[in-house]
Length: 336
Image (cartoon, rainbow, N blue to C red):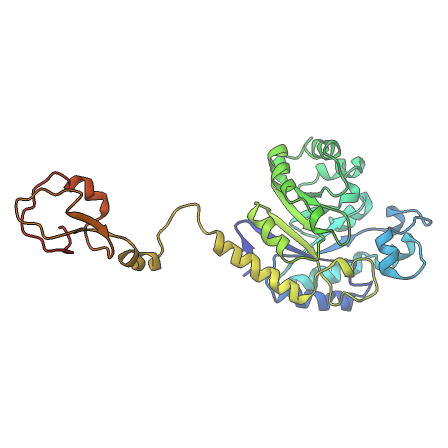
């Protein structure tokens, strides 16, 4: 049974953390699938389509790779062709976990679209790639659009482009901060609520912090998807390992989000079985403050409210005031 909570689904991204090795990717799928998350995600790109051969690495990529190569050389190493896609897709089916991927251009979309998947993920860097968004708008799949590095006008334009033919109910936005790792004071989770109100579409979180707490908070704020990068070892050479969670953190997130579901509970005020037991101990009843003879008038000076509770609730105190006692009551005897 796959792990979902209140329509919130976990997307665990291998991305390029396989370092170009299918066997490494399979080992990661093995680990992720044991935790019954819904999706494992990769990145579908064709290096020649994605960047020029002299394109520079991002600063965090230079730091994490620790060697002088171009962005093109790095991407070429991590590129997944059709055969590799097919092997990973079928291995995910074998492990009962759904294969999904981010697409980085029209040609990479055509590659990815050969497989039966639940949605197309558009990474933050492609949000201004309107030719790609136009093509995706004509597809019949759900689109999940990441919004890292984007201002509100850019998001509006992307949403408009993706809503020309596609109904809004097939579009999901992902709040994202594209820094690796993201600082906690920059994650700005209130954007989840803001984007939901602004665009009236489901909103999830693509989380690049090293925190396991952020997913719990995002879930509480109504995130429909929570995405985290995953690695077998944060010290491996590669651009994204250091901004990824390891197996211990994955286990904690899955357990924590599940517990958060239980903690949040229902949209109702219910009395628990333990609370029912405690009523008799902590609630009060109406008692005789002193001896009261039959026919005497109940007044403030001869009645008191105290524990334990037994039949007569203090709510009836004012109903008793001014009435005659129908029998004798000894001091501390309950008035019933």
